[in-house]
Image (cartoon, rainbow, N blue to C red; front, side, top):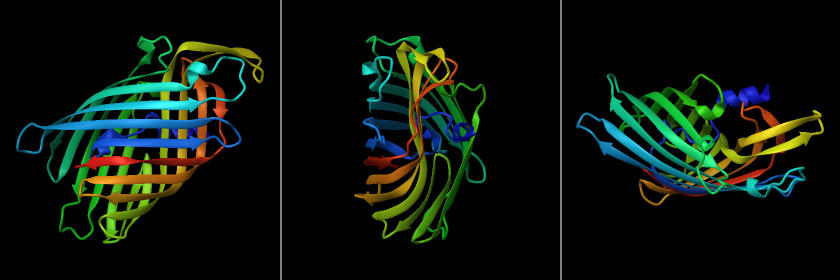
Length: 297
């Protein structure tokens, strides 16, 4: 039941719901150790979005690039070699279109291609390739002069990584209900923020994170618990965490951010070609730290 719940929240664990982001560029680093284990997870991520104005009516074409380098130190005892299961990379290219509708609504859609793998064959293979697609309706009431600005996003998102033949819904609602407080209700992040001023902000948050990648040379091993032979084709991680965050704006558009928290769901597993779990690597909750710099619209 827990994994079904997580799946409904998190269709694709490369998480960033790109149609809700206003980031033009971002560079960040993530680290969390695995409790009662020598395993640890480190990730470096960079992305850039390039909006292209199509007309004077608010229509834009947006192209995006993203790179992730993941170092998962796998130190648990196994019956198979883990050396090439410690370094994964992903590359994404995406393109989107957004334009205004009536009554302050905006429509956005995006499609992307992702290559995610351990690349132990030193080349790209077809199983490394993933597809994503999404569309969103957005109503934004965050203009200056509005007493209590708010924003609502409704959409659907689909990814071949999830292994399900249907898209999943996405809902995100933001409101700044006083000059010093705002909240976001939604997935992959829910938070409440306190503004010391427009440059320094703290928040309490619950958010999701994770990754997915192909294993080029599948791992075959014997499961003592199930008394059968299993085949691991890919690796997947799903994280839900609660914690606090801090943002400091150097300028109106450039900021530093950091999150520190403790995972409340920590599910790292190997899966077969049908996206079924064949080995759970670690489920113990642990410390989580993420920080970086981003440039926003």
